Every structure is written in C-alpha cells, then in structure tokens.
Image 1 (spheres, rainbow, N blue to C red):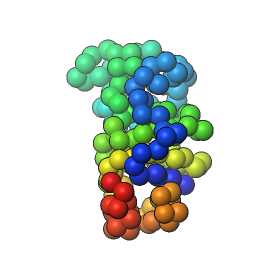
Image 2: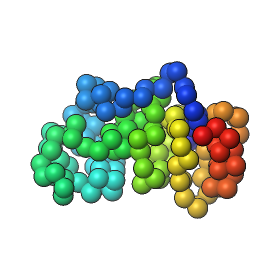
Image 3: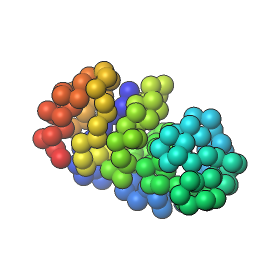
Image 4: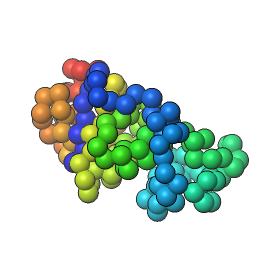
Length: 145
C-alpha cells in the first residue's frame, strides 16, 4: 500500500537528485520495470546501465534523468527510506501506486498529486485514514497542504 505524509517530515530525504547521484546502482537502470517507468515519464529509452537515449537531450547518463523519474527509482529500490515526492509531476502518480502494489512504500508530499479517477488504496499518515477516491484524498490531504 502507498502511504503518504503531507507536510514537513524530518526523516524525509528532500534532495532526491543528490541522493540519486551518489547512491543509485547500475542494475536499477536496466530493471524492466524501471525501463518502462523511464520511457513513460521521460520518454527516454534505456540503452544500457550507463546510457539513456533522451528525445530532448540525446545520450545521457542516469544522473541526467528528470527529477521525477529519479525519485520513482529511489522509491522502488530504497525501501526503508522516505523521499520527498514533491518534485514529481502527476505523471508519476500511477507509478507510485504500482510500486506500492507489492510492498508498502511511504512518500512525503507538499502538494496534492493527482492519483486519477480510478479506485486506489492510499493511507494518509497524518490522519491514519485510508482513502480510495480522488475526492476522499483531496478532502483529507487538503487540510495539510
């Protein structure tokens, strides 16, 4: 299940770009799930663990990826860490839900992310309530952002 804490959270890692730069592993990049995320979010194709073909930037290293996809990758592989996902756009929302389908994950947000109209299960840690719709999410999370 995806768990979200809205607002300041002392244990959250805020500078995800720096964390990614120094801590990512090559094998993360060639993971089939990650390759799909990179293509969907950045419209880029992973050629190998060190080279990604971006339609805008050309051939780039993994640290050249956009902040949102870096955060998604960190959330997928750094299971015991909590990352600030406020650098992520709404195009990352479905991926947070997919990552959390198999194992619980916690993210920190400072804005209302659009998780879509379809049903979902998200635990709002601020109130310890599980929400299933966009309307439920907005009515609770709106108090904290």
